[in-house]
Image (tube, rainbow, N blue to C red; front, side):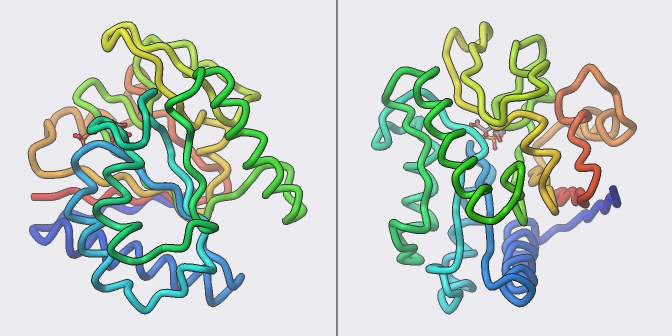
Length: 230
Ligand code: 6PG
């Protein structure tokens, strides 16, 4: 695993450029771009920028998945899908067939299984044991969580399932999330971390402090890039 750390004062623009570069690389090599979107607030300006600079991208050749989702309907203000639809999927006119939405509005266990089955089908169609994303975008929580892999939660210990329903006591809420087995199967993982995030937390994670879930992302046959806003 190669790791790159990019510190930038042009966070949204540089992150969007990075994603577009990854898209062109994947499309050039395999005529497909499989990207998992991260949620929360950090990606909002990045996705908006990507919708502009990527308007000529052949979105019909992309497969857009979600690294995690809140267990809410897709039009809920908390929904990661809603955020992505408003910033990227709508403005870039991404075709429905390119989008694989986690159904946060149904029973979490059922939704996790359904999503895992969909990823497994796509993997099988491509002759892969586990679906291999070209790029998985990840955020970073103030407690060192990433996706919805929060400290002290059950999904952290998942070694088989690729998608899990994860109860998060601190939120008193269920989440749907990629697990480490799926994340670590990616060709490239990119953490997008804005300037407001705690610098010492970031440094401790970069040093590999295992108490933080983000430290445990380790794609054995892939790269990890950290894009840090300054
Ligand atoms: C989510 C995210 C989560 C997020 C971090 C950072 O569903 O909330 O996937 O992992 O990336 O919590 O969130 P902010 O970008 O809002 O700081």
